[in-house]
Length: 158
Image 1: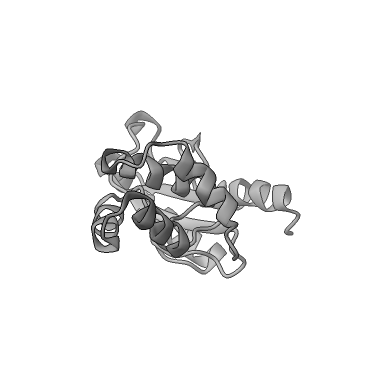
Image 2 (image 1 turned 90 degrees about the vertical axis):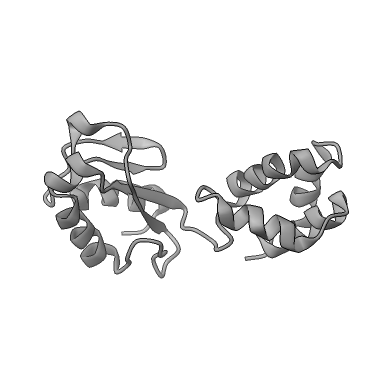
């Protein structure tokens, strides 16, 4: 995937070249590209005049930032106590079966990435899954294919 340097430069130019804005710039890259590309890290290091290693340390410290490309749709599956008790491990197995991916992986078609999270703050709706910011509560194995299919249809993948 080629990342247009103009897009990276637009993000950088939105901030003064001061290290205190480095996290905000990394977050903007994450939002724009769904991960932080190497070219973005290098451009940011040059823009700030700081070592690339310090930016990598920051990017790997925060779980919300990723250095690997993610799928177009991010699935966050809760495995907090309430969700775990109500079957989140069964849902994890279902996602593995339907998409062929484990937590932290992206499907071969680049459509989905799966993240296992500790809590989504919706314990009363357990088990809970979030796809691209949309919450799905009381998810069952029977509901799972329909939820995923609606995202495939948006992309034109059947």
